[in-house]
Image 1: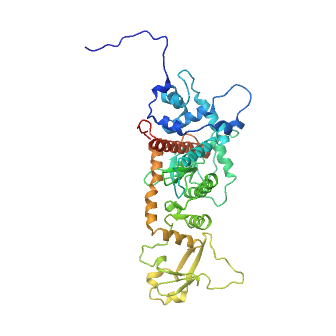
Image 2 (image 1 turned 135 degrees about the vertical axis):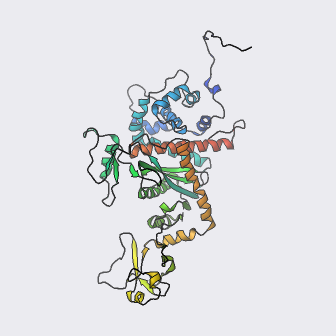
Image 3 (image 1 turned 30 degrees about the vertical axis):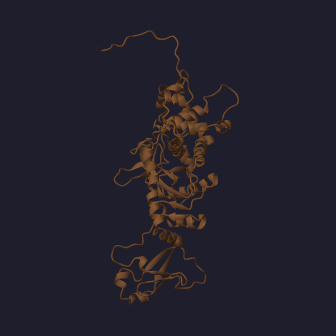
Length: 463
């Protein structure tokens, strides 16, 4: 017989324990075991008043933000609704059934105010990294670096040409936070920095960029530096979406990791974008790090003429030798005032003798359109040679396979954590979002590995 639900009178008293209704295999249980916010009050003490009514506990807001970035719930209004309804979220936030959930506007005030001013998101990220190090998940032998584009919260149709004066929206006396950050950053712009093709009127620090096969958008780059042992993120930095900024961020991240965690890798893994001569020289000569990076080299030719690899370098004579045996030098003439002969591109030009080229039988295969052959040699060519030599080893092949760990983190960031478009504007907003997302990725990874080593009743945690 089919049963029928009956309406019954509500019980007067309930015996309900929130702890008993959260599965032992829940992800938040594992994260709660490895998360330590005991020093959070000390980090924020100078940014709270000692008088007045008690504020919303900062630990509660941090725990709610961790939930939001672990589960891809980034709008504050929706996050508050989910915490209000979900028992596991309430348990993780230390809220009872009748405890109120903070208003969504509270997050905005704290995010753009005391949280950003105190650097608490960076502090939280560093604390999680230290927990990963204490758990033995970081070896410090090999690092990998890469960058990925994240769309900015800016309409691609609302932009202005980069080489024309811009009329910012809103009152000129009180521009938006993102516009104020952009105008303040302009004071530190060096004259040789190129202006972007288009500037967003709402988020001018984002960069107008088009990837192959996709329409142009305003975007930022999230830069990851990971330890290749377990794929733990050691540092993250937000930059405008162009290559020179991404490469420069690598230096800052490596130095920051060395300063904060006393970690210096033996090798650094990256793609061709990090194979510029100056970057390789910095790794080899200043930091003593092996660059497992393809060399950025455009000297190859596809028209059948000799490439630079066909010329032999003689370090003692400071000259190249062409296939016909003639010399290419940088100092055919002597000057009264010595010259460095270094170009603006940090290269030295080596030229052959015009008389030798004129009578050479190989001229048609060497320099058919010029009276002499020229070779531009970087002042950091020794570092480039080191990288070329490393590229012939089996360890380099292993490094190429390990580099996919960074790409997997980017896929996880966009597909699982759903951070394929920013909600906060300005470089500081992008930095906050990238740092919180990286913290969530490390927490999920740490929780998974810790539970695998010390399982609860034989269960595993879905990460």
